[in-house]
Length: 385
Image 1 (cartoon, rainbow, N blue to C red):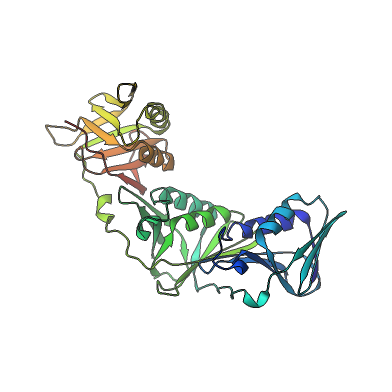
Image 2 (cartoon, rainbow, N blue to C red):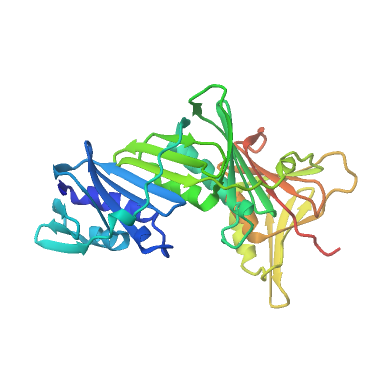
């Protein structure tokens, strides 16, 4: 194999693939980054049996071939190369990179031991890359991040019904839901899938170089895959990941809350106040939202050492109750996650009782209609009477 390409093209492509490589591979060969030529240039790939990443970029190909080298080392080298075209030559035992006056020789890994890369499943449709990235980030915040958790709580449920796609995640203490419009390959498309939240968020964030992202989906079975592809200035990027074979928690009914009390407040003002008050919130203690007829207040404390209290302007409405909610207890981190995920200048809190779930949605105007495309539910903390 002998090829030539621009230094920045090489660096960006290798960095993109290397981010998908496992830090502790089950077998050494999975730490490798596969380099191969095709009719359109050069393809860099990585695979760990669960997820794959592949990027195709333009290059001048003198001799075709393929080679497998340490992905981390290749990525580290590509970042440090001088700003000159890069020539890559490889045979069965080594790869040589030449860039200006710099020359690296890397030992190759055994190609025969490298697993076959998964093929993309059937195309399900396309969606705007920025819209999809925002939707995934809004929902993934409600999934658990630690690998020791129950698998369904670390996932995002993807549901497709015609030209509507919905994403949902829950760690059983909160629930995030987002609905968006997309372009299905079939107008009667009806599919569902469960995907690791962290993997989906990483893929969506890394695929914003083009205008549209193509989503491919197979049946949620033992060999089920979901694939993503985008073409843009950074070449053609493609990722696949295995679907999770678990049952998503039955939490959808929490999205339909009939409020007894609603609170409307400026999102940015509430975020700023919550951050300040949360500074004195001791571990596992709630941030209290005091609900009054003319506004709200936030309170938190660390025993007798520190207390915080801040008034926040808000519009409070009671809906047919003589004993309205007086206070609600929030996990401070959960509250800030929800508020930061809103993409509207105002937020509406819908309360039933002090220890029941609270629904949060966005508003374009303080007196406007709620935006129901994004919903965030938080389980309130029971406060002492």
